[in-house]
Length: 328
Image (tube, rainbow, N blue to C red; front, top):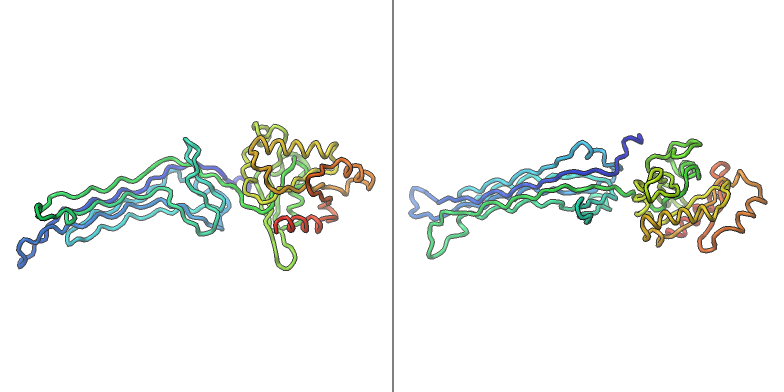
């Protein structure tokens, strides 16, 4: 499953050319000097981006590098407008951002199911010769050509949409926590970088309430410079409402580890530090009460802290409560 998670693709899109206007004159047996009646050309097809809540990856675009809409049809006599070119709909997961590869400019963002954004508009159809008739020019023998479509390369980048994003070093217990509080089944093992792709889970709360939690691959010092899995997955926490920092109670220095994580996020995108932050101390089942008291004395004072164990579920309900209170 992990190999199917594609969150970055580069594709070439081309909208359709507009159809040409018609040069045509009305000729009927009993009508003298019928005059011009050339119809307009049809609009070229658009390239449209559409949100689909059932998609969670961009893998369907990985092997579809060139996307092209059809041309508009030429106008015809009797002022008949040509048919429009068929639009091409590119369905993407919610959280997809489309950028210009040269400038980095954001061209479109999809955040809702069913949301549609025109990425490349089709060319307008040309006017037929009926539009150019005047008192001094009764028989115009010309019409407008259709306008050309637009084309270009774009980058589609997926940023996971979740209420809570888990941030921590490898083996901090992020995947285990997600598996305990939701129905998600991330791969769990006692080695670094078990999580190679983001995992999402729906966390059930009281009175049929729920929120979405995202497990992001582990961060190590130097991630913003490309070490470990680098910044490839840091983009996925840009859309999270709350960042839940996880530090294992087995850590030699909890506060230092937390500050290292903060520093990596700051180097990647300083705006991430404006999000609500909660510090979770995991794996408390491995420590004595005396050890936990020592940890509490060294904790940062500017952030809510909750102690928990995914193994025996101690503190899990308190963790859910504090997350929900911050979301609400």
